[in-house]
Image 1 (tube, rainbow, N blue to C red):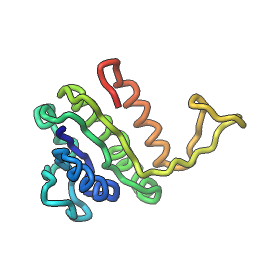
Image 2 (cartoon, helix red, strand yellow):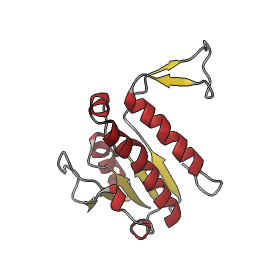
Image 3 (cartoon, one colour):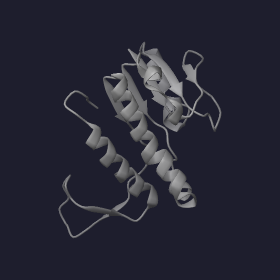
Image 4 (cartoon, rainbow, N blue to C red):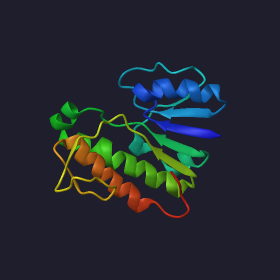
Length: 157
């Protein structure tokens, strides 16, 4: 199985990718490598911005796993526009492009901890309304709305 890991050179990817390779997966990483490249030499490297990834780039992948984005609340507060671009627009763009390319599964994973204040409820359900006091979590909520709207009966993940 051939996988593309977006943001695979980060915290989660640097632990996940050696394990995937050890299990026999073919793994490529698309990343800007802001913090360096400490990946095993067996991992394929695609050094480009996620917004430059095309349908043609993705057509041979079975799965795309999104690990990219800005990962902390101080960064989200420092640059709300970059927070929206990298944490909402980028995963939505990559999911859309993967779907157009016929990728079978798109997985979004995040190391973001979710801090929310539930409005007017003592019992929580999946449908409980939530209000975030943190800009990063608000952006994550926006991203989930975009990704859920793109999901169809033909896709999974």
